[in-house]
Amino acid sequence: DIESTMLIHTSASSSFGGFCLATYLTTGGGAADKIENAIFTGGIPPVFVDDVKEVYDKLWVKVVERNDKYYEQYPGDVGIVKEIVRALKDDPQKLPGGGVLTARRFLQLGMSLGGGPGAFEGLHELFATAFVDGAKGEKVISKNFLRAVEREQPFDTNPIYALLHESIYCDGENKSSRWAAARSLEAHKLRPLFDYESLCESGNDDDKVYFYGEMVFPWMFEDYEELQGLKDVAEDLAQREDWGKLYGEEPVKARGACAVYHDDMYVDRELSLEVLDKLLIGVQPWITNEYQHSGLRDAGAMIFNKLLEKSKD
Image 1 (cartoon, one colour):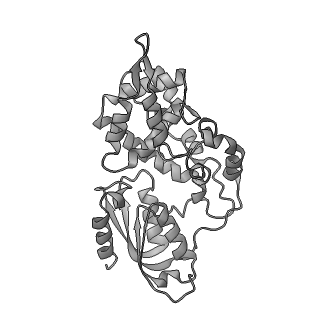
Image 2: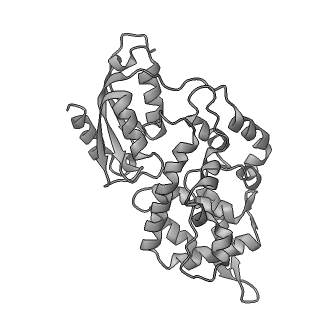
């Protein structure tokens, strides 16, 4: 109860949890006074955007950077990924649990590129299992690969993730998402890098096919089995404009600290620092390129203790 006199010594959050903590601090009628330390890790919401599209205008740049780092580490996967995309483009595969693995759905595996240690290696090992020899010696997509891809993608088991993902940026009335990630990509200068059909048809073996990041698209409600019956609901939510306010507009003085991951693929650094400067006054940023968005999971004790000390500055 925000109105209680209970003092919360430390409230720690990560990723979307930080969005929730920011809501509590800025709309809770003095909630900031009830928290001695507000700890954020990779989770400052982009409060000051006028259009949700602006969030993705920033994030597509980070997605490209992570793709480039992946291919720098595994240059041989440029050809393997293109081979997989060509195969799926020509012959989309039915998945064991339903739905279909299309080329575009395959490229959503890039959502894990922003993870910490092991994220790149996991994808590399997965791609190596994509093909087996068919009865006539031809390459065919392996069943084990299809099962592994299905396990990696969360949307069939967590449909609300796809339905409400963009709504976390809809702060108040007239702030509909309108498929913001897709709108951003369509108009983005980086769009040619995600034109997998043209890249696969080009004669240049060095042309890389870029993976998507944590973005949702209208076509997902065709490709994913458990999303197919929710297409109309998804469209209604994307066009909805009567959202409530998520954050207060008046600056709050909150004691705390925040890990801002310099290369974060999911939460933009610049938009985060703007909110710390204008709204969450007193929350001290610790900007680091030592960790990715999964920092708290990868080095939780170290980061938590670092932020506790930082909050005393």
